[in-house]
Length: 305
Image 1: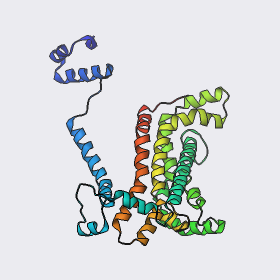
Image 2: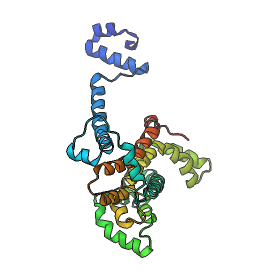
Image 3: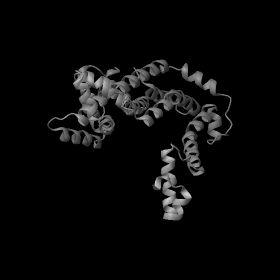
Image 4: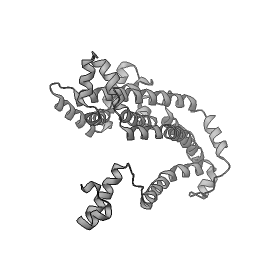
């Protein structure tokens, strides 16, 4: 009966608090969405500006000369006229920039796809399958995240040397094909996003475990797996320490090539910043192309059978 009353009538009968609750409930029923206030837009604008400043600063330095940078470490906000010249110097240097770009693309794409697949597979097992020792194995897996990766560099390098993989991309790809964080991420997501009823329905339809994973689990895990793949791609693209050790200058990735550029031209900051732009630009393009689709997928959170 009270649901049929108007808001002023509810306010007269039950008070202002009940009237506000009724308005909020009516807005939810009608599908109304509260628009964010000016404070939200101001905060987002500040975050965007703070994130953009380092990229623009590198752009300003890359469009200058070394002498101008030495005289004015904080350059003018107006870009200079030497950007194309510095980019050409980087592309035509002797640091194998195109080979480094190809290597970074191969390592980042293969690593991202493998982490998405294996993390989703392991996350499905930990989230929905019942087997002995599941809790212990998951706790042990999470505990490995507390161990610094630098502690395993020496034994990992010895293993790669025994396999004859030093200087090869396999030494960078294989150790990163699955991550503890990825398994934990997908486990937590699938526990809520994948109902047991869908799995049981697939089994009743005659699907084995592999078909159930491919037709039920993968569509449900796609939003979280896409975000995991994006962050894995960025991490692999910007990784420096392990590729620098195991690949060296003979078969570098882009961050390693940038280090070689810095070693060859020690004080040429304009050249170094031009190399930074070359490394950063593909990541910006990836976010521009895939960002909206990834956000839309996460917001939908749909489970498709």
